[in-house]
Image (cartoon, rainbow, N blue to C red; front, side):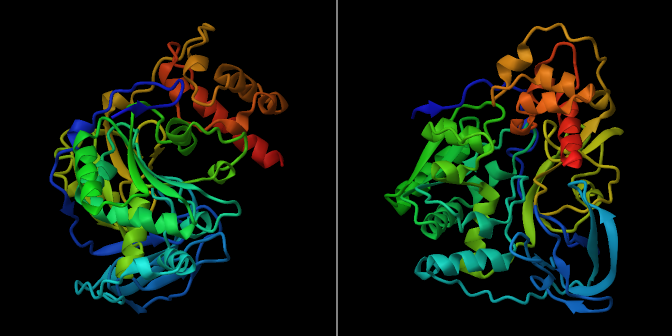
Length: 436
């Protein structure tokens, strides 16, 4: 099978062996959950419950606030204990609903299986919206908007690259739920009137490729195919995956739909299957708990709102002091201030680095080697963007196309002087946004 990829990028040590082949568990039922009402790009959901209200699993507790928003559902049955403001795992300050679990796990949605292939494309999108599905690879873009595109779509790609080091939840999901994901992709294809669906998987996921290939042969859908990607970072970026699979270039400032493509993460497509076939809202997801500071790294099926502390304890706790707690992978993840931070829809990994791993590097002057330029997947000049950002020359940053930076961290990773290039670029982006 031919393997495809994009230009430039970096090869990073993967550390996926820590959790890739571990048995998948359902996490223990938490005593309380803290469910943020801002788990997506766009307006936070409107709280529709109050203290002392009784709720069931899958019950709507946060209503989408306008079109560019998403519904939020309870992940447990119990009583609303509090409504407060927190800092979320994604770094936003948001309102959150605290629910004390009653242990009954009573659901408010039906368990009957629906033949979702009989749904119209409008009904598929309505179910996606009702279930509160967002991009679960980290982008958290409301999925119902993606599947009502303003331009014609001919191809839907399932992003199975999972290129971040340590993270293996999508790899395991491909192996465990291959039929669900293939059927979910068919629904996505139908929703946008596309001609074909493509499952794009990196070649380091040999078992997943084998399982999905066998399932495709068994189901025999003529408009779905699998494409193998060369393992490289950041292959999981949607514009890189479109380039690798279809050789189409998304224009600067553009979206995948500008080249006739929709891209969805493996977990997102699984959630779409469950919403359409099972009427199941998005209230739980697979998450990798890993790192060299964790005793027993593994993948867990986790209720949204569970604290990271509880999940770490279910993995045997820590085997040495933790230097840094990260939501996501080490390249693009967000460092956390507290172990009590709740997981959300976009949380694919809880990563615990050791103190040695978390030690900041010694920063030296730039030696103009050009390595950051040679690896940038977008073809930018990171050293000049970072230099102008730190010098507060933001007009110069714009002239070097700072907005096109995907913040993948390849430049900082490859820099022999250990310059904080991506951090400087992020700072420049924030300052430009504030100025406007």
